[in-house]
Image 1 (cartoon, helix red, strand yellow):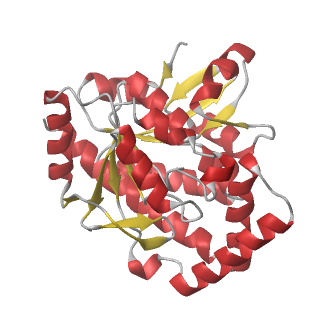
Image 2 (cartoon, rainbow, N blue to C red; image 1 turned 45 degrees about the vertical axis):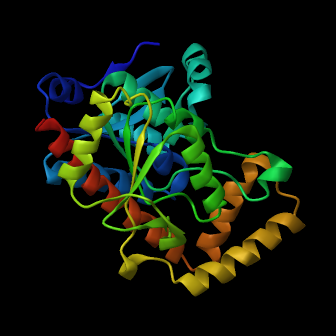
Image 3 (spheres, rainbow, N blue to C red; image 1 turned 90 degrees about the vertical axis):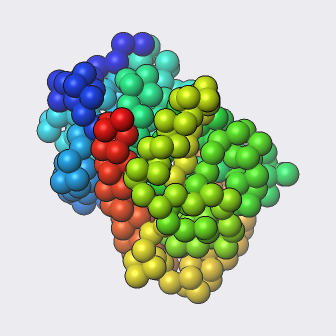
Length: 302
């Protein structure tokens, strides 16, 4: 697989300047048009505003792209038929010359191959509810267990089984730390209701952990920096609990299973919170990309 690294990203990596990887699924599948393109540009500008270089990742015509130009970004946002690619789909997409937006697992994989150490996103996938029945677990977890990248996120999506996901991350040996919190965030919520064992309080502390990973030979797995959405921007917890219960009931009644569950639940939350869940999502992503840029800067300073 031949990576196509943009000139800007290639020069930044070559000169040791800070780079932050960004996923493209939020652009192609997470937001309505034309808001998706506007948000994509805003996230890249947020990274630049902090002093780092954004590297939005996607696959177009079978070419894995690390850093998109204006036309490529517009294509991901506006073209019909853009697929959703996890890391397992990458060889298939390359061989078939297909186009797709990259999920957390695919973005982390391609970014790490390009030599990028910091990746900012919204929320991770994880262990799904009723796992004992469905055996449904996001590919994000296994991929992060064998990929040396620092992922800045707002925890895992609150529609998932959060304690089971934390247990799974522990089993897989993936390091998890709260950023300025001892509570694990719940994507739309500042606090999922579950603690974390470690707290990091500055980008410099995160970079120190990354250097320690390298020194200990532990950089073959990810470091998750769980950055909570500000309380002022979170989805009202009571509204979240009520609508999520309704969504889970509707999901069961309609027989929605497998990969269709997550988009069904997320769409239900958007529609039945009058868009408040989407606003919380965007607030979380914006905060994460800014923090990711600051971490990348601290890391680049050595």
